Structures are given as C-alpha cells and as structure tokens.
Length: 429
Ligand code: AMP
Ligand code: GLY
Image 1 (tube, rainbow, N blue to C red):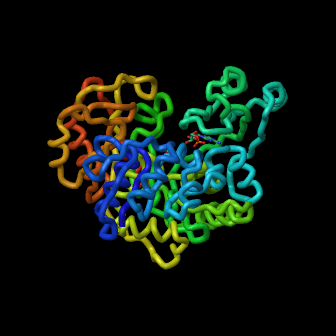
Image 2: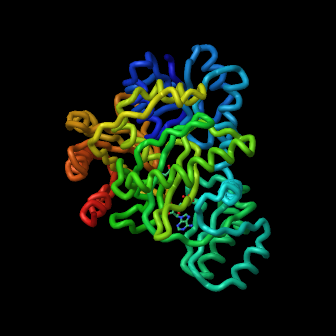
Image 3: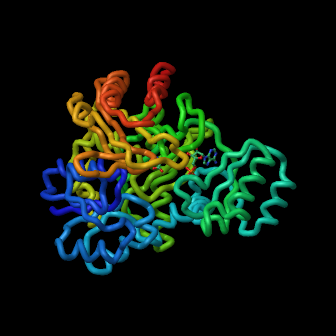
C-alpha cells in the first residue's frame, strides 16, 4: 500500500515510522511532516488543514490509505472530503469529530449513554455562569471552553474566585475566540489519569494497551499544563479488570450512541480516564491518537499497523484479530524548547541526533523540528520525543535518558522523572 500521514508532530513521526515498518506498506508520504518524518517518509508540502490540496495529492498519487493525525484536520472535514471521492481514510468524519470538537456535545452524549463522567452544567451567557457560581456552595470546580483550544481551554479551579476568573477569560476576554462562546462547568474529579486509545471501525472496538501522559511541565507534576512532557506504556494503573470496565461502561456505549446519533465513529477514540474511588470516569474524549502517548504505544505494537488501520477504515476490524505487543514497557521523554509551554524561539541547531540513534532500543521521534541546510533545527515548543524499550520500567527509562543525554541545543530541557509513577504503582502493588 501507499500511505499518506497527515500532520507534523511526534505522533505523526511515530505513525510514519511504524507504517514504514509494516509489511503491508510500500511507501509512506507525510503532509507536511517534519525533519524526522523525512527519515521514514516523503514529506509533501501541504498544510494539514488544506483539505482540497490533500485530496488532490491523494488522488494523483493513488494513495491506498490516509491516516489523519491532528484534530484540526478532522474538524476541517478532511475525512468527509476523502470519502466523497472514494479515497480510503482512517479517522472520524466532521460530525463524529464533534466528540472532541465540542465538550458540550461530548458531555451530553455521555449523559445519554450513561457513561461515567463528572457532573456538569453548561452556559452560553456570562451572567448566567456568574450567577450559578455565586449561588452554589464553594467547592473545587473545572471550567472548560466548549470548542478546541489546543489543550489550553481547561481550568481546574480550587475556589469560586479562580472559577470566576476562568469564566471571564473564556467568555469575556475570549482567550480562545469562538471556542469560548459556550462553557462547561463540571465537578472536580480526584484520582490518577490514564489514556485509553482504541481503534474503532464504526462498530468493532480494538483497544490498544493503556498509557499515561505527564501533563505538567515540571518534575513531580508541578508547573503549568502542557501538551504532554512524556508518556509510558503499558501502565500498571490499568489492570485487566479496569480495562474491561472501561470497555463495557465507556467505549461500547459511546460507540453505540454515536451510531444512534447518526455519527458513526471510525478512527482512534482516545478516552482520557480518571481512575477515582468510584471507578473509572471520563475526563474527555479525543478523536485521534494522543501525543505523546502514541510514541510509546506504537513502539510496543508488533502487529502490522497498515493492515490494522486499513481494516478499521473498511469496517472490517472484526476480521483483524487481537493486536500483538512487545511485552517490554516503553518510555517517551519529551525534550522541549526554552519557554515552553509559553512562546518559544525557533531555529536552534540540534546536535547529537546521530549519537542518540546508536542507543540500543531507543528511537528519537521528532515533534517540532525542521531541516535547514544540513542541520536539523527546532521548530516548535515540543521538539523531540525520545522513546525507548527496556526489560522493565527502570531499564526503559535508563535507555530513554541515555539517548536524551546525547542530544543538545541551546535552551533544550526535559522532565527527569518520566515513568517514575509507573514504578510507584508497582511498588504499591
Ligand atoms: P481535558 O482537556 O478535558 O482532558 O482536560 C485537561 C486536563 O484537565 C485533564 O487531563 C485533567 O488533568 C484536568 N481535568 C479535566 N477535567 C477534570 C475534572 N472534571 N476533574 C479534575 N481534573 C480535570
Ligand atoms: N497527550 C494528550 C493529548 O494528546 O491530547
């Protein structure tokens, strides 16, 4: 097969790498890609949301399967446009992508489908939201902009004042533009978070092994929220029993109700789960592979990813059978540019990538990189996702940080404690 991957981050580099190594795949293209995807695929200079040009390219190159990375492409309707001209594509339609594109849609669907999640209220007028906050008892509360906000539209508030500030930022200051025309306020959940990624063909659900992200910028989960500073797979937090519960109480009813709503879901369904004292509850749905979770998950996948995603796109996942996994855990450490998650300077020359490539069982996935002459330079906040396998978490972590040590650029940094939580779960039994 000839495959096209849409996107340009660490997730897309991992997808390109795994697809290139799939026996069913002869050739991989990536639009627009980065300096890392160029090592596995042919980069094509088309923006991830330029639907018209993407369709044109896929048609002229006779692409057999297109795999969509970012939510922005999905919300822009890339899947609808490909399907309209009979091109095979893995991802949800625009209507199904609402599950991520609108928090309110997803909360209402969960309510109908009886999926365990935080209690919520929604508001489209600032005054109503303020009145609600003033009248209710003062407890921690989460305020969310309804629409897409690059992961920044969620405020976990300790008290009324913080919640008022968040509502004002979203609705009055319009920090996220039209995404903040509506807001969701929900009960604050407490527990540990895990990411459940599932490949779905409209009806059949194939769960990938559970992973965990590190959302905060600094060691010990301190500092501001980020797109994710590292991840590992599997996570000892999600036992087989918990996974069964998540499939039964979350994934199956969600996919069923998407069909009831006439928005059949095909693609990667990502459930952000909080494991609470009352069991697993959904924090949010994403309609795409997670970043950086995809890097350690795919590092462990032994099945042919091309065949898997093709089967899902064709509605034939039931014929695929269970996925095969490397039993070794994988750890991904994100290396970021100075200033991230705030504004960053681009263009610093990255050195040591060849040395890192020599480290056994490690792979450096590029996120925000570009090629400039013979150099690879930084081109975003999250720059690399250095990922490694090991016999256990200690060894996987060691391998990943050994590769990290080889790489340097001015201002580059990373967390030092990625995957320590996995070991603490194991120690607690
Ligand atoms: P989301 O984009 O909805 O996943 O939210 C981003 C992060 O905010 C999540 O990963 C959680 O850490 C936190 N969060 C979201 N909703 C809640 C909630 N109801 N209770 C506690 N934390 C939450
Ligand atoms: N790692 C979080 C996300 O992909 O949204």
